[in-house]
Image (cartoon, rainbow, N blue to C red; front, side, top):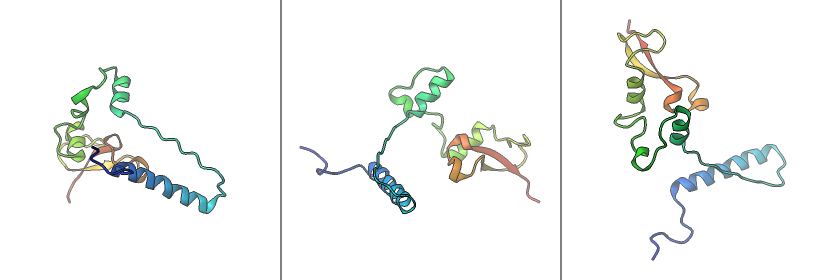
Length: 122
């Protein structure tokens, strides 16, 4: 017996489909569209990173023990990764915040787009 109803999709899949349809609708308002072909791909970021660094390929629980393992959130991870020092002035005597290298819209909130930055209260 199946636990899900026929035609049921996981919420993450529903969001992907919705985003594709929304993109198609936006483009079709501007351009005449006669045919649509959608190609999707998934990437194993941890595996790609291991290949790049020459480290062993992740398997099983390695995926749960990724680079941010044991950190409360992305902000805490970025501050720890940067040694609680401002990446620009290298000080550790300031209040810290996490700053985007590229805009959030362009680069997102992934750790590789974030740095520790310090500021001094006057």
